[in-house]
Image 1: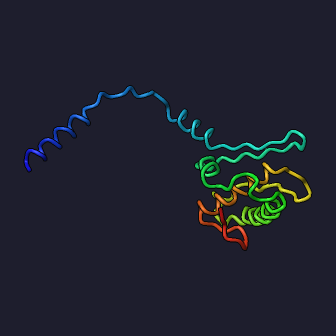
Image 2: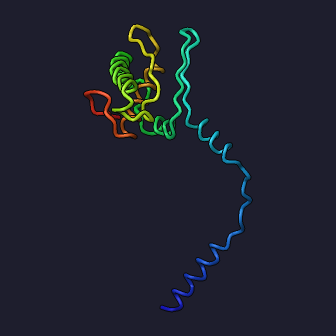
Image 3: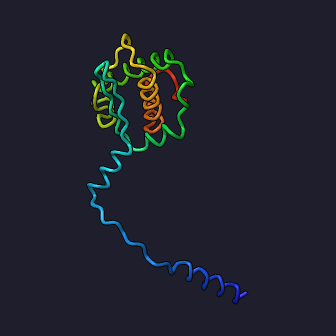
Length: 146
């Protein structure tokens, strides 16, 4: 029994004695910029002259791994949900003493009479779902579902 334990310890020691790899010298600012770039979603349309920039850690990964695929929801469904979520979001932005101003910083200018296209509505809807599940918020009468 002692020889088995001794052999395991020697093997563990040999595995842990790996040569060290050179560490890339990056500054804190470079790391934070890389995180921002990887967690930034920009949605733009030159025809309508609008741009949405979402900077949220983990959103890109969540969108790629957990969100329903594009085409799962109809554009009409996404537009109606987005309009309701935007109304509630903007109400919370205007009430910083009642709702956390770090969560609700800026109003969203979303008008239901403008056709933003499927891609914008899809990503905006999924951001609202991500936001609600990540921060345990509820932006309306519906439970956020994926």
